[in-house]
Amino acid sequence: MHDVRLSGIRKSYTSGTTVIPGLDLEIPAGSFTVLVGPSGCGKSTLLRMVAGLESVSGGQILIGGRDVTHLEPAARGIAMVFQSYALYPHMTVAENIGFPLTIARRPKAEIDAAVQKAADVLQLGHLLQRTPKALSGGQRQRVAIGRAIVRNPSVFLFDEPLSNLDASLRGQMRVELADLHRQIGATMIYVTHDQVEAMTMADQIVVLNKGHIEQAGSPMDLYRQPATPFVAGFLGAPSMNLFEGTLAREMGCETYGVRPEHVDIHADGDGEDKGVGRWPATIRHIEHLGADAIVYADVREVGTFTVRAEGELSLQVGQAVRLSPRSGHEHRFQGGRRLAA
Ligand SMILES: Nc1ncnc2c1ncn2[C@@H]1O[C@H](COP(=O)(O)OP(=O)(O)OP(=O)(O)O)[C@@H](O)[C@H]1O
Image (cartoon, rainbow, N blue to C red; front, side):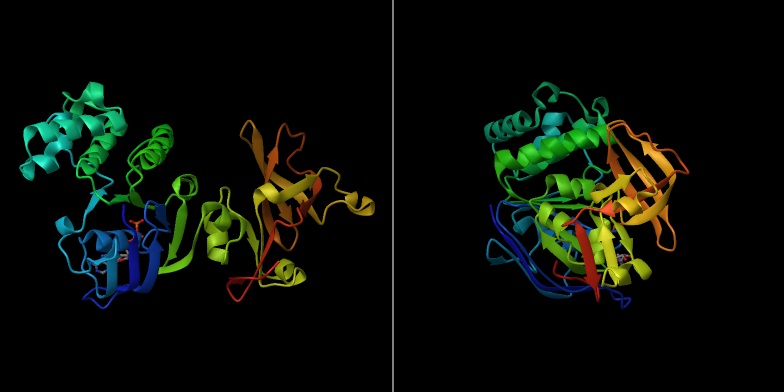
């Protein structure tokens, strides 16, 4: 396994568009690093530059200390798994998985052993003689991953590999990929626009916005201490409540934020006399999710707060309540940066 270092990486197109103005990033050996950000922020471009599928306009890419900036993809010791699996329809699962070794003219015994090993890791052993059309979407994606594994790369690159799968299969594959990473211990770089995938799989999340890094760190560090309003709003579901204007000014900042799970609702709208709740609010809508509920509550002259409330709720739409943020869980931003607590 190898680390990956990007220094001063730039990407401009001949049309004059600059997608990545200059970016530095360290991806530790053996880490599961997720590049996440909204559509068009440059995630795929960055991954494709690491893979060698896209030329670099400036800067340097080191894999395991070796300068690969201008090397062919095949010479970089990486394997890439795409969103579309691109399996060969006329080949069996075993032939698809073994294909990279077949074209490298490796001996048959070696190919068979490598295919068997990958199939064991991915639990595909019972499907080896099927063709892709007789597989589910999740199984096809596992075959595509198997084809990457047999090459024994030091770095795996994944470009939104789960986005063609339905929600429950995506959940299952998230667990399987995390297992795979634990088993083979290779460096993995994973691109997604799905913040749930980023939070659940990464040991390092890199949040990209318009071709620059907003913040990089562990999922819980980014959740607890987002460095910018962008990261605060991007990670976490439902999104953090973020307000500028009057409320933020009252709180001594330009942007004030509190997560839905860190707001308490007091059912007593007249609670001020008893000292409970900071903001009087009116319930606008309630989504019952079973174990908890998402409550939307309007605070006059501020806006709508989203609140995650646990358990059975006896609240009604239209009811007057009071809201209070939990201390230690408020976020204040000034000039686009986090203020110290
Ligand atoms: N050949 C090109 N010429 C000019 N601009 C391009 C070209 N190819 C891509 N871009 C632009 O580069 C930016 C980054 O694209 P990229 O595919 O890396 O984004 P992304 O973050 O992976 O988005 P998505 O999640 O939608 O795949 C986009 O704004 C895109 O329009």
